[in-house]
Image (cartoon, rainbow, N blue to C red; front, side, top):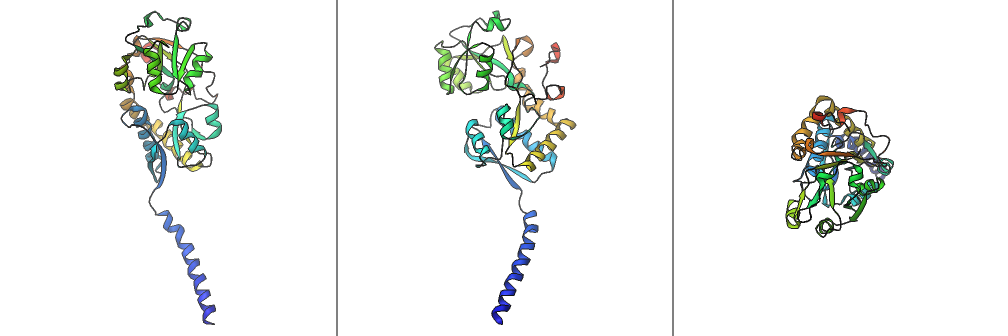
Length: 297
């Protein structure tokens, strides 16, 4: 009889415990959302998306704590880990048909399309007469350097522009200095980074031309993480609506690109046959524009 009473008492206590646990979990600390740790948070390509992500979380009133991965993750590795739910919950990357098929994404270009604005780095020793380049046909007379797995490599090749490529940044700078290519194109936002390597190899940012194609960087999450995607979408849309998105963009990103004197450059627009049809190109408030010359992307 006593044993039966003990057994009944145990199940009663267990039932009470189960009923209490959910209410305890609700008031627990905010859930961690892990993003890929970058090499450095000193450059705008790393710091700006992270601040924008925090802004979206704040705007959506989500109980989320952002946490970097334990070690630096290259983009390709980070995408693999996100796809396999292996320690990464969110990342920002160039959109593509493949990424949009593999993940949930928020269709708001974080850099307002500047990921597709490319300026060339050139060797100070081997002068390239970029001031004579006035159109795409002029550019085709030269060989550009790209990362082997960069989307830009395949976009240039699709436009019939000669490309030499390498995986390592050091190798790309060496190719430029040894005249195995004429120009190393990088995003206008990232062109000024890694100044020490530019100085070591005698490389500078060219001031005469800019190549432009449709491109966007989005936030991506795992397909099963609908809740996180919804929070980010609600928060970003609120930030766009109340102007805080633009405020952060003009605070962190615009000063970087203004040093490139865009209005003085010849702009060469090329096709991006790999851009998804879903890209919101008609929503003008989501893209950066050169108002002074009334150019639009």
